[in-house]
Image 1 (cartoon, rainbow, N blue to C red):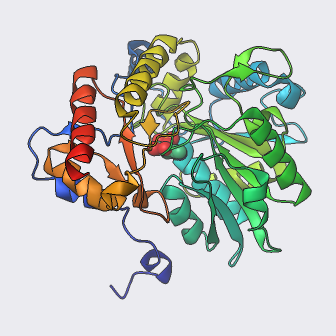
Image 2 (image 1 turned 180 degrees about the horizontal axis):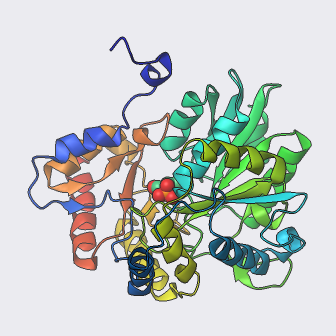
Length: 392
Ligand code: PLP
């Protein structure tokens, strides 16, 4: 104990563990708590990684990532956001922009926060949030400042503004969102980007669920339907994406960050002395991943989303999730139960969901992941509705 730093004492184990402990006794539960897709990594990606290993390509890569992969990422970014990234040169190491291949978005978040946060700096975290944010901010010596986005989970400038102080340094933005599945509207992305620029706040935009977007809107520059993104409006933010969710590569640890070169250079330096590089075989898999069309999987998840919305309507208040594979219903107030109390009743019926207080300062909601087989999902949704009716 005496060896453990105060920094670590300030961080509690993720509340999700408590759910796992409760769940440990269940046999074959209906599991609506999983944060990863239920399909396997596409075979071509596996084969590319296996070939790299067998060909002896097992060394460290450049710290900033393999040139091939960087190029694929850059091309994708330029085709999606030409207005923001088209003047990037070569592999993005021009005067303004940097690109870093990381060990997942988690790696990118950690590097970005350690790079930008000094003790006492405040970091705006929209609530509900991905649980890692508040812990990484604390670890980096910053102070998490939560921005309430209930009940519609849109992060509007007026919700943010009252929390801005001279110490505000960074804003974490996550669209599509874990845990709510909500997709930020384009006008919200634009307004929040402007607010951050006006107030000299660095936005870290976590877009790990960008492929799982069911509410695409025509983009300003070419009219094509795309997932709304702050990166459409400015290069002066750090945009992070990954391969974990899109290609079910959660265990492979691959992602990237793009943004202002001054910050990315420091993140690269930090990676050099910590992760060194993202896993090499994984980067070979990542190169191939850019060739794949995942739209059938996304269509399947949209259908599951519709199933969740249909089944829960009438029983739970639910902001329609426009992306990711989560829904965040509210426990009906008439039940007089907290999110955690309701979830205990659900777990007792052999179904796993996660209480909202794991992702929030409030305990009024719960998170469902619908990344599972249709029959299991249907059974789980029936349990949720029945239990709410029984408790009424
Ligand atoms: N950001 C969000 C919002 C997530 O939900 C997750 C994983 O659940 C991550 C980041 C971490 O992703 P990675 O596997 O790329 O580290």
